[in-house]
Length: 83
Image 1 (cartoon, rainbow, N blue to C red):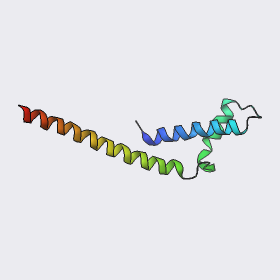
Image 2: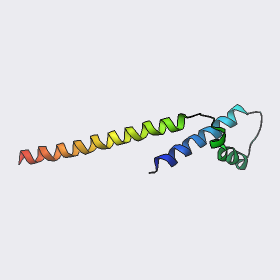
Image 3: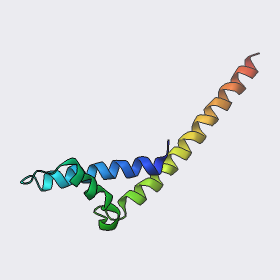
């Protein structure tokens, strides 16, 4: 799973939904909303939140992976001690 791509997709979809809700007096087709999403990086509607959130999530995944690996090693050690 590419975390950067997933975050981009999440914020792109969120922005399109917000844009639609905030402009509910208009009807937008999918092509228009796709164009809005394509220009999101220039407009930066969320400021630096996507970048900061991405860093925090990456750190969380790294910590979770290390914890999971430690639990696996601990289970192996316990199994070896019992035999």
